[in-house]
Length: 510
Image (cartoon, rainbow, N blue to C red; front, side, top):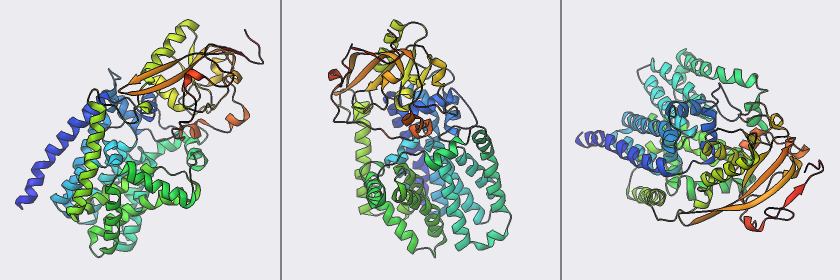
């Protein structure tokens, strides 16, 4: 009992320490492109969006009333992450004891894909909290507190407003009831909880129905395809070990097997079946068509981390400690001045690019706009110019998107900034009367150098070609970072596009 009480006393210190460390990282690390994209959502609140339900937009909105700095954009997810940590501890304490709950809460801080949900502004932050609450309330409802089904339904509804992937948890709960608690299938409470969760999602469905089913289209056909078959499965598992879960990933697989073998213990059966669908779905989708995201495994790790806590031994402690060292080392590179940041050329530079774009726009006049050919650049330029000028995504004609319609800016002048390593997706001369590639911008931060190509586009004619029309904003949003590391540096330009050289198009406007 004294040992259990010790973990009860330690959990507040774990949460406070995690908040302090994450706050520092959140305040100094540039926004990821997706974070900038969700920040833009918070400037255009709606019942839904073409890519995800709206919870993250409202969370960012609440913390950016008076300021839009890095810390304020991430403050909501940081607080939600603290709530998730405590909820995970409480769930573990009820199922397997305070020690298991504390270990699970600690794993939430060191498994990268979970830790990111504790401060990165993404739908995963509210999803993780909702997932943990559903597990806790459903367990309580199944063990003497049937009124908790209502709370479970509310939490599931919150999850559906965050990320639709929470339906895999609903599927896992249904399988568990069918195999281990069949009597509940003859009672009304689980069905009322499911109906309550569905009510939360009705506004999203209404929005989608009135926007040409953009969200459904993305789920059905709009995702970016990578490897498929066994090569895809191998790739997504490799990403778990070498980035998303590190050395704790084989531990999660081991604990999944142990939970399967201990299903006579109701606690392990509950955690096994509520975790399994979230593990199987990405593997299946990746095998079939290569469209799964490695982060889809993350919610399963929440329940499995409790099993890890129950099975804790020296080997698991060593693997977790090594992963924690990697995480702390990565954070140190981000926050300690003077240290070079591995991968910093993918992280830094957009603030400087936005300043250069503003400078070029001043030379073009009051009607100038920012032009981009992929959502990553459009989102980051919108954020670093604080959404004070229109950003036109020329490959995105979908009226359901947050981007303004390109045709509304016909004949305006524009400025585009493009990472020099990216393979261009459009020919700028097809979207404007005259193209000038200006001298490139080179940014060196923390020992890493990044180059940007800068274009002035005179007389926009933002009509997508046939190939571009086949790609909606939804598929553009679902793309991955596609850096072409073999591309020549920006200073070298490319065929027919030398810096400062004017390119006339068929329209012939001087």
